[in-house]
Image (cartoon, rainbow, N blue to C red; front, side, top):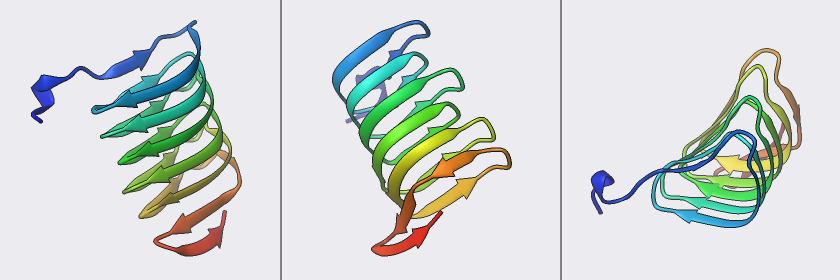
Length: 114
């Protein structure tokens, strides 16, 4: 499937949504979301977003509030504004200064506390 064959998914600022998102492309959450997110690309949780979810994606970027679990194929990144209470799995983890993180990060089957 070519990238032009589908649109990215955005839950806009001020939107409160619950359920399941299954998108072949990038998923960006700017509002509040609870449920399951599956993305064929990245999941981006913006600075003002609040997400309680089970996430499956290629990459995860968290700048807002995230609780739940994430299974990510490549990079998990928490910006300095991130507030995370989650267990995540990925190839590697980047935590920027200022981020609040409570949970575990597992890399390729090896558990490491964060």
